[in-house]
Image (cartoon, rainbow, N blue to C red; front, top):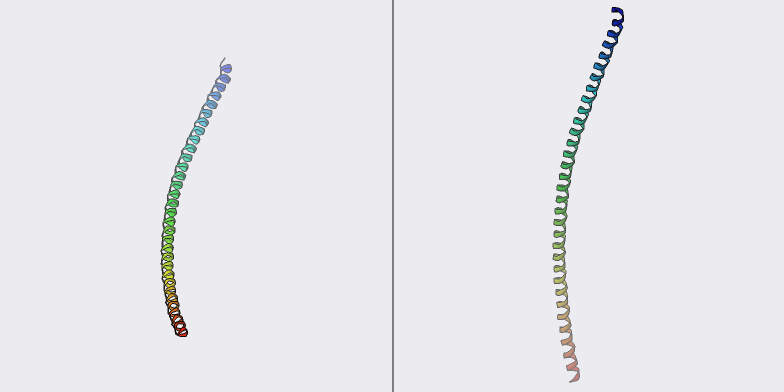
Length: 118
């Protein structure tokens, strides 16, 4: 009878060993899945932080570029106004000279005509 129980005990011990090994494999798989999830979470967090920093830098650069463009436009407008004022003054001066010469020539012509009529 001892011989009959020995194979059964051996089979029982082998089954318990297989179950223990399966449980160990399951816990290894669970640990690996948890580690992978933690690593993915950390990478996602770092990626989101880097994206936020990049967005902030882009916003700052855009603001600076907009300010510089606005300043350049303002300076250009001021130079255009100054150039227009200068041109207007020069035109006014030239017109004044032309009118003065025309008046003077008209007076001379009128005097010559007056002298010729006498």
